Image 1 (cartoon, rainbow, N blue to C red):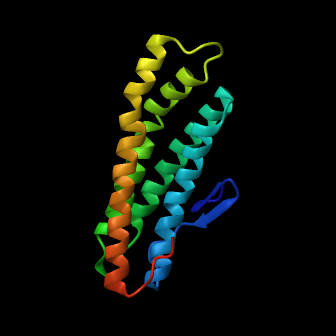
Image 2: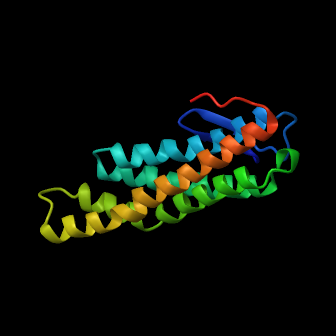
Length: 157
């Protein structure tokens, strides 16, 4: 893979350190989050344990690379909050892709029936896997909306 390039599910980006327009900056950060979220979705939804674990590993690799990229990205018009919220979200995704997500996948994709102990452990992992992820993602949305308002752009969902 060429330095500064990343491919996940045919989504490419080139590492950037600054962007000339607020909309480009917004889209770039959103694209970085989307690359990580694509792997999250594949890991959670894949019914085959081996490929779900491979998606979790790829999520770890991609999120680690993106964190290094975002650290180099200059905040548009002095932005700190939007970029920081994205870094917080991706840091969490990187962290869970190392331990909690693979553990969860192994429990729910294990051949045979889910044991009572396995079910309890899977339920115990949900707050960090999903609840915290959703809270951090909401933080990204709040920061993104504030960034958009400050810079006169419209966010289309």
